[in-house]
Image (tube, rainbow, N blue to C red; front, top):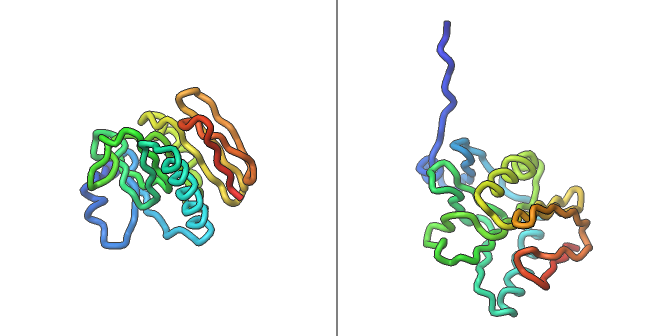
Length: 177
């Protein structure tokens, strides 16, 4: 009888050992390689980043917003490393030169065809478990946003063009045209 083959478990050291220019995320010790984003994806990320950064600046906010590629070490283990499209961090003690150590307050993922199952299922569970306060999944194909407010245990669905209130900032809403 053949012994069961143990699935390879990867660590953050394996992520850092990737060839220059190759991007991947690490979730529960499994590597997920990332294709380069398309133009529509980058336009959405750029617009969202601008709107959030502008709001924080105008309101003298203490949070910081980072677009991808920005390293987020979700857990204290060395088997979880993600690069959300947008990360908003309000506890600045989580930041160092390598990225964010612990859960951001708000994460936005812009879905691509290859990342859809990971964004809608794997990351949804992972972000909730890691104590991300709010998680948005922006789906350009459906022209829809799923906004998860984990603190209030609520989920809302919005269409592009609608005002989308931000849970972590009272009085702030975004609109994706």
